Image 1 (cartoon, rainbow, N blue to C red):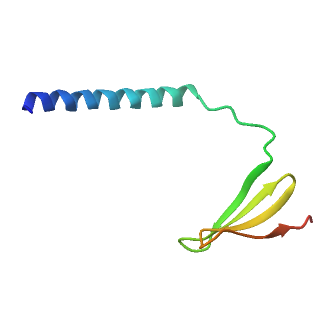
Image 2: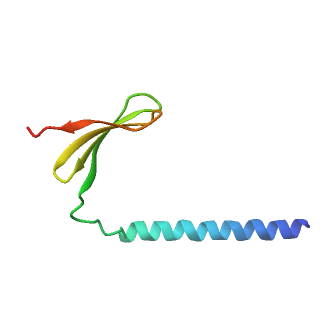
Length: 84
């Protein structure tokens, strides 16, 4: 490979990255977002990190809430939250 070939490849890469950056800024300025889905039946309401591996999640499923422990050797359903 000659120095000129490497320079052309680097310039082409920089051009492609610049175009991607410009497109991202344009889409952000226009406010393009994916259309949010309505009527979701499964929603993660809250997440708490217990330690670097394990997390406790409060998940709402069809008007009921469940607490799930993830990240250990296996995932575990801690229990369903009763209605107030």
